[in-house]
Length: 286
Length: 312
Figure 1: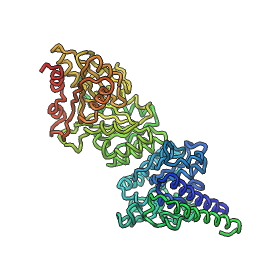
Figure 2: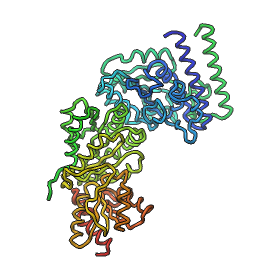
Figure 3: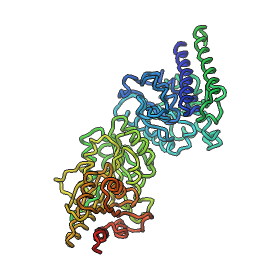
């Protein structure tokens, strides 16, 4: 990957965070922490990895993306709008009366594959898409992004068994491992570890990655499938609220809306990050 | 008595014929290929069969994913589990998303009889009715079941179709036309209307024959599609007969009786008597014993009609 590409993706990531904060601040509603933690994962998938066509959202050979952690709708909408699936201006209507942009995604939004928001559903839907791909001998891939708290749901593990049974090497599960759920530390609410061993025991090929490192994410997704006949699970280690100093790692920001003052501070931090990305380009160093 | 055939067997046979003609049909089940009478499907179409093990939630979610990629998935399994365990998947992944998934719920109502209420589904019409964008269909015999199944292949909408487990008498001949959402008037009459759905239709018809012998002229309607309701037929029944009895293998709350009452009370108020299972876990017994216990058999329906007419 060239330096230009890396900078391009980094810039896209900061811009998405600005969108997220704007949307949540204007709507006075949203899921701040989990949208911010998933930014690089979605940026890498949508701008670099997946084969998609914003002009033809229903293209039969497209790669599929399922936002099983549907509450991270802000980052998803921001990307779909930026890619041209729908006009960017629509983001201003997020959660507003009559808007297609509800707090959890629906197929009313061009580019969204399935309505999500109830946790523990997306993996099974992704399995159906992956099986359909195998039946039709198509080589598209299916990406399902889950939250780590979501893994408390039994339906995830039910689906995990089925994906392995059907040897779905065209299915990639991703866990946004930010270690916080609404109540607090995932390990205190309901111990999840050892996640690597668990998924491996369920028959998945497990890969761990820094979920904010763009180069690492690109490399990881490009290398999949590492083995044939196994579904792959990417555990992306992330920080909830990533990118805004006073939101990072603070459980209270699960669905907290910034005050006027916090909004200004958040935007100032993000604009500074944007300037730094651009400056690094100009100086030719990263 | 006429020939008896279980509806599930008729459907299990019909889906083979339909899959032969339409390559996009996929069948899913959750360790229920035997009880759903589809054991032959994986032998004939191994590449279009998805067994998920005892995992109803996944079966419905996977079906949604298949549908969103252009397949026509039919999920076969017990009504008690598909209307409860996987209800959230039915609501979100299927109905809310508008995925073309057909839930073929077998052994519905109290057809598992003495196995108890873990295996009964007398809540399913009520819960499905409250979910937007899913049709609810209860065929009454093997011919209606297989004909409606054939119609469903071309309906690209979520559907919950419920049949029973036991052999039931044939009501229709092969010449009958069926249309989803359009009820069938089995007997014309003006004294009162008996509207039944599913396997209670035969009992309603038998009750009507007994009423005829007492010089009562009942109308009998087979409301095979509970949602969308054939409002025109219900309106006519209310206006022309002035009294309605509803019969269903379901709770008296929120089912066919609920649907009819909601409609007539707001459009043409007439007395409605709802026959079904009262607000309790049904008595232990075979399906026909449970029917008799709660007055859902011909005798019970006959008595309810005579009472409504002030004849007893």
